[in-house]
Structure formats: structure tokens, C-alpha cells
Length: 318
Image (cartoon, rainbow, N blue to C red; front, side, top):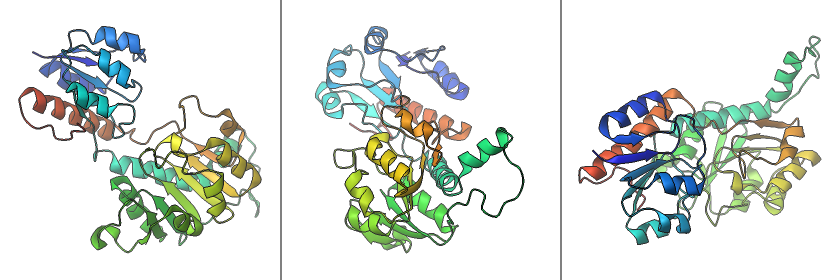
């Protein structure tokens, strides 16, 4: 029976499946392992099931025991794994795409609506017993229906966001590396550069992966392209946003509000966000449903099972 190191606590159904199929070493305390701890515990293991909290740099991969042949990451994003170094070492790396599209798109719409309708301020008013009754000017937000929504990254999640936004009669615009086919575009307007998209985006949703091209894509220069009073949503990766530039725009009113589920350096987000009432802040809950987290774990198990039985992995990265 192959030995698997599971670096974080998994949903019970996932741990049950791993325990039935492997000699699995679990992390019941859910502590985040240091690199040294991971390397020590990986000794003698045949495979690793990791999370983004365990970055595998080229140096770390080089030090992994030769017994480790596969790394299954419990995530879609894979910027925490040095894939080139993994290939050089002959290490198979897999991820868990597709299964979290809908859950992340749901959170995107929650952040969009929460920011537009000043949900944080309203909820705080009720909890602090500051609500004194109806006023015609109380917490006036931004109307969503019929507004243009710009989507940066029209992959599976971006398309799922577009389907939901159409339910609010929003007008979909998008910027993507390549234009979608007409059936997948579904009437959305394609922009071949970010400036063109930003200039029409009264709402902007960031749904692209973190790459060399997209890091700090939302910065002081690109924020200036947005219409005054635009609303920004990020449920992709925190490093796509220049925090200082976004915070300055939120303070000045250039951006009316922001809905954020991800942050650069999370969980140590820029503390200035906490003091801004025009932010709707979530703790990276994009895929946090029982059904989705189980599906992610089962996808990782499917990859491990395939690898150890000599079959192609369903979702390989290397």
C-alpha cells in the first residue's frame, strides 16, 4: 500500500477514502507545515497531497525524497508549485480544476452584490443596534441590473460568473488571452486589451489566474481607465491587485466599493482594508461548500489512484 502524506486536514469523506486506499499520514491539528517539517515528514512517502499553504519552490522540490513520485495539489491554482523544477525531477503534479467553478462564481456574485449594496455597513448597523428605522437616504448603493460587467479571464469560472450575471441583466464584456467561440461567448463583448475592457466596466470582476502577465494588473494606471464610481471584485488571486493603488482609489471615491475574497499575502492582508467601510471582505471562501471541497478531494484521489495503477492522471500539470 502506497504511503501518502496529507499536509492539511481534509473533509471527513476525503480522509475516509484516502485511509481506505493508502497508508496515509494525516494532519489532524491542521497546522501549516514549515518547509523543513514537510521535507522531514515526506521521507519514505510515495506521494503528497498538498494545499496552497505548502509552497514547493525549486529548492524544496530538489530536496524532496526520491521516493515521492507524485504531488496532488488540492487547488486549481498552481503558482505555489514550481512546475519546471517538478518536470526536471520527473515529478508528476496534478490539480483539481472544474469542480469548483460554480462555487467560486457564487462567491463572486456575493462579493459583487455585497459591495454594490453596502452589505457590510448594513449588517454592522443591525448588529450594533444603530438601525433607527426607514430613511430615504440610508445606505444608498449602486444598482446592479442592466449594468456593464467586465470580466478579466473568461475561463470556466469567468463563464460561470457571466451566466449568473446575465440573470441580473448585466451586459457582459470580457478580456481573455484568446477570444471564445460564439457558443461559449454567448453574446458577450470581447476586448483584446485590458484598457478597452476597463473603460466600459462599471463593474469589474477579476477571474484570471496569477501569472507574470496578470500580477498587479489592477494598479494605479489601470484603475484610472475605469469609470468613476466603478465597483471591483476579486475572487481569483490577491497578487493581481496592487493593494496600495486599490486602497487609495477606495478612499478617493474613484472606486465606489470593492468585494474581495482573496488578498496578497493572505491571511496577512493589508490592514488598511479593514478600516474601509466600502469594502465587502471574505476570508477566501470561493470553494467553501461541503460538496465542492469533497469534489476537490475526490479529484485529488482520482489522480493518485490513476498514477499508482499506471493510468493517465485525469488532471495533470506535468
